[in-house]
Image 1 (spheres, one colour):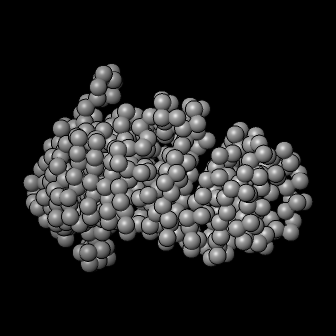
Image 2 (cartoon, one colour):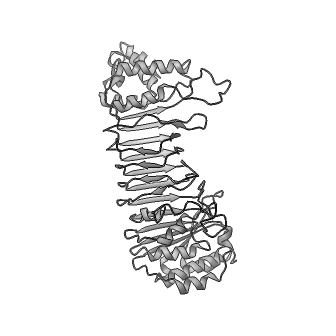
Image 3 (cartoon, helix red, strand yellow):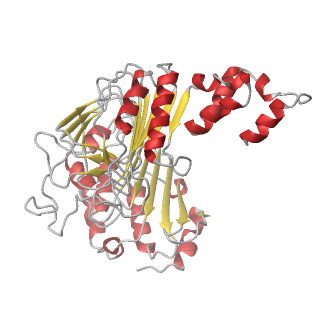
Length: 441
């Protein structure tokens, strides 16, 4: 690509229109390239010789096949840093890589290039606003040892690194507002994000021996998805507006059939000290909330024993919730959502749910009641071919007793995880006919 551009630029009768573009636009284009490819543009014409130095973004993505060895790439980047100086950076991406010259003969414990941590420090010294760090080394995590101290960092995107201290405090990044962490390890006791507004933790690893405490008092948006180990304990989030919590995979907070007895190995560690709940108390200020789990996870059920009032909640989605014991939990949470406007229930395959005894219906009807005066819309979504006719009827009766008319309830069939993605909306009037093919027991 660059050879063709150079030939055009060198031609006496050829007009170089690209070089006539403003610096800001060319800097943006160069920022999309790996750093070594961006530097190569300096040979195109006199106009391009120093242009790369003004790039607002650097992508240090490793040597791959473009350098004879990792050491050559290290030397190149270090020379680039020396030539570039400390000009401000809008964004920077840094990817760890192995230091071996070839990939023959795997080492017992692969190590990242020694420059990885120093390049992070360089980005911070350049007042970088958005930083992405990828530490994956053949499926392992890379320790993040560089202290993150910055008065300018607003966004941090981290993949496959781990934190390994008793207490990690991000107060040295006072304007950090957005954090994304994918497949990271939290081998810490406590972690604090004082200024964070948006936090996304996906497929992260937490200890199975203790519960990590997360303090993020300024968070507005939260996503906790498919994290392994013990569910982290969330401290107060008074500004929270939207939260999505999925405990479906890897969560170790599972009851082994004891019914919540504290002597159970799976239930050990709940509650935690003086805290009344692990999640729900801190989520009680949310306006939009999604709660997902798997059959044996007990966190939501136990948290509901001291259920707070969700005084701002308007939209609620419960996935895999309405199993046997969760019929009571459904009523309990509806008792604590006074201004709820939209409710979505997603019913998935679960042996406990399908085999739930009919004798519980009377108990739910007599012992518990609720009124949802603001609830305008209820969506019940069930997997295709799932035999849930009686269970759906039970849910509808519970909702009817809370003042929700059948006309307000819509039914939708959703695909099984391994199936196709066809959606079929079912009108309330056609409920009996539609579900009769699925079986009633």
